[in-house]
Length: 79
Image (cartoon, rainbow, N blue to C red; front, side):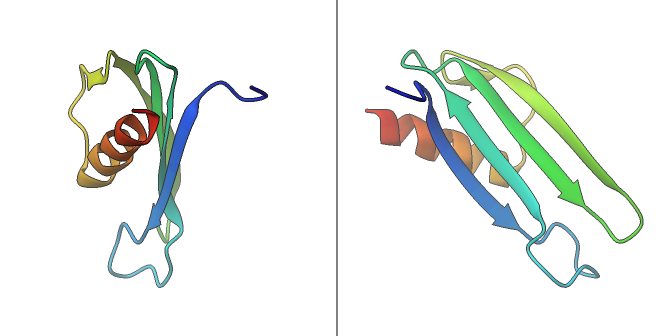
C-alpha cells in the first residue's frame, strides 16, 4: 500500500461568526488503530492546529465531537 494508514477527514464551522467550514479534524490510524487525530481550528482572529495521540483506538486526551467522529469512522472503515 502506498499509504498504510486509514484516514478520515471532516471539515466544519467551529465558530458561529466564521462563515465557512474552515476548521477540520483528520484521523490517521494504522492497522492496530494507533496513530493521531489532527485538528485545525480556524477563527476570525487566530487559528491553531494540534494533534492528539491515539493508542489502540483510544485517546488519553478528551476529544471534541468532531474528533470523536473522525476517530470512530476511521476505526469502522478499517474493519
